[in-house]
Length: 71
Image (cartoon, rainbow, N blue to C red; front, side, top):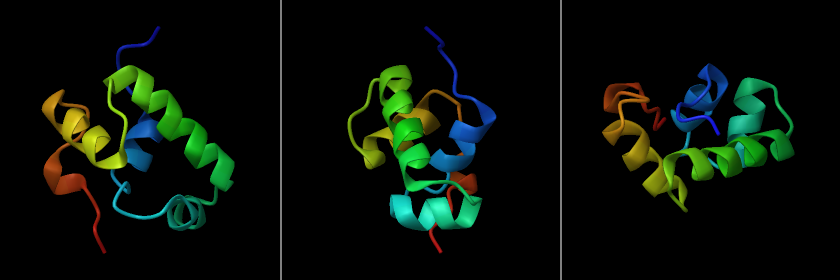
């Protein structure tokens, strides 16, 4: 099992403040693809919600808090 996020997963995690539909639209992905990435990230980061994924991603150095998009 992988210990680190892929670049695509990091890109999606930076957008976790948005709905899966909004993320899919921004990145030109299917909503199911976004959901699959979040599910995979849950296993990698050991988190269950989007907010806890963000916290764990920042804590483990996968993303920087300044990279998280909120608007």
